[in-house]
Each structure stands twice: as structure tokens, then as C-alpha cells.
Length: 258
Image 1 (cartoon, rainbow, N blue to C red):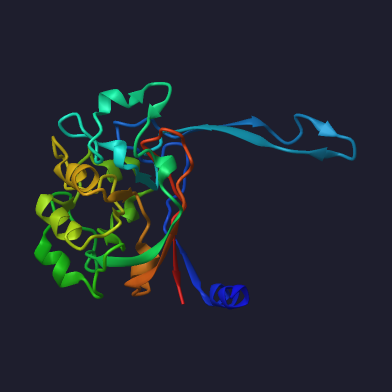
Image 2: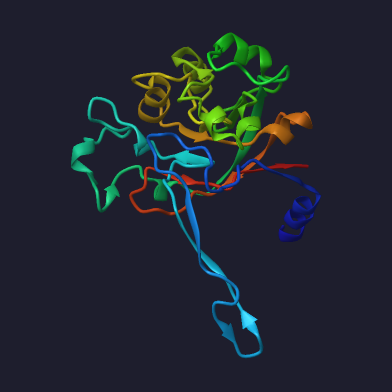
């Protein structure tokens, strides 16, 4: 069995769906920025044999860059998805005791790309409707899938002001989220800073998916190469960091295609 698995893996094309981290990169204003500094340069200390090494320190929010939301990221009426009263299960030091990101297993699931930007990036006020999702879906969506929506906004990643746009951007409203959740998917993702038409004062898509339906959200993906190669179906692979009590985590997201 292992040799067969290795042979299949060797044949796979691997698409990196994650955005790079760098000082000045886009970040939602609700979350801290990515901070980077070298703490030791080559030559600061030289060991015998003229050997040297370098290291750095980083600081960032758990919802910065390509990341996945834990189900405890949002609450409504003081409750999270499993019905727990959020005030009883959270603390600054310990995070959230229920449905936190360290409880999310590594993800190896069927992925589906719905390319909505074949004619160019969607406008910042564009609403992704159920009708559009149905029309642009090239393969059936099954229970347990990870469904990714391409808006074309990954093209703006190196221009933080343009990408964030004062938190204005395309995405589904509640009806679009309900269309996705009706398929019983595991997670929904996009190449935008928020998987939702924003601004949205009460974030109905996040509430519906995370709180009401227990569906994870993945944001700030890079779906450009996948779309360029016409890929609609793939193996989606990602692993959240095991941050105890965490509400989210960066992920290195991959698509594998045989």
C-alpha cells in the first residue's frame, strides 16, 4: 500500500495556495500585522571552522495571511457552534476551551474550485449569488468538500492598501453561504481578506457558517495558478498549527492534482 501511495504522490502536480508573509503585507485591521526582524545575522557569532548561522523573530495574529478559522472564532447570542456559552469557556491566557483550532485535524479532502474571475477580478461591491455559484460550478459539490471561490483578488496581494480597500471587497452574502452549506461542505474559502461581501456589520456569512453550521472558513488564498490551469477538482491539503485555545491558525494550503 505504501509503495502505491508513493507512486501516486510522485505523479501529483502540487499547487501552493498560500500567500507569502512579509513586512507590510495585507492584514485585516481587526488583527495585528505581521512583524519580522532578524535576531542574529551571519557573522554576529562565528564558530570554529568559520561556521555561522542566522535566525529571526516573528509576531503575527492567528488570522493573518492564508489562514483557517476555528469554529470558536465567532459567537452569536453568547453561544458558539456546540451550544457552549462563550463567556464560560474563554480567557485571555487560555483562549477558548471549546472548538479551538488545536482540535482541527490535518485536512486531506476533496477540493473544488469555483472560478468567478475568468474575465478579471470582481469589483469590490460584487455580490456572489447562489445562481452564480451554481452556474460557475464545473463539478458537483459533495458533502465534506472544501469549496474555494476565486474572485481574482489574490492579484492585489503585494499592494496592501488595494487588497484591503478599507475592508471593502466581493464575496457571498447570506444566501450564497446558505447555498454552500446546503451541500454539507467541510470548509469554504476564498482569495479575499474576508469570506463575505464586506463591509457587513454583523458578518452574517461568518455567523451562518461557523456558528450555525460548523463549517470552517479559509481566507487569503492564492488561487491564480489553479485557475489558470483550468483545475476544478483536486486533493486539498492543509494543517493548522496546534495553538491550544486558538481561534484560528495560519496554514500552508496545497492542491494536489494527478
